[in-house]
Image (spheres, rainbow, N blue to C red):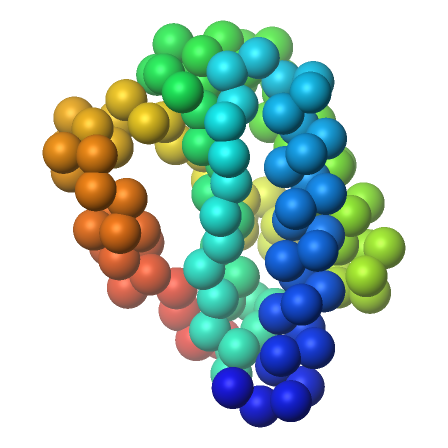
Length: 122
């Protein structure tokens, strides 16, 4: 990893940690988030995955428009560390522990590897 990539990575991890800590206290059923990125195509390659405990908790959050809350929170925290995005809504997705258990036997590394292959170079 290049020195400039490491600097971006640190800022990104700090911002997303802040997003996670904030959302844990304010969104029912939310449990964690992660990100995938190819730094040679940053920021367009960034993919953020917000994970809920159950399909029902995810569905309830989406019905309550909490996805808009996540988009705004992520945008605010990334802007605070000078990371700007044009297509943030396309780069944030939502998933659940229950869905991973059902389709990947709870193996997030396999589930995320499938997503990683869709992180495109732009």
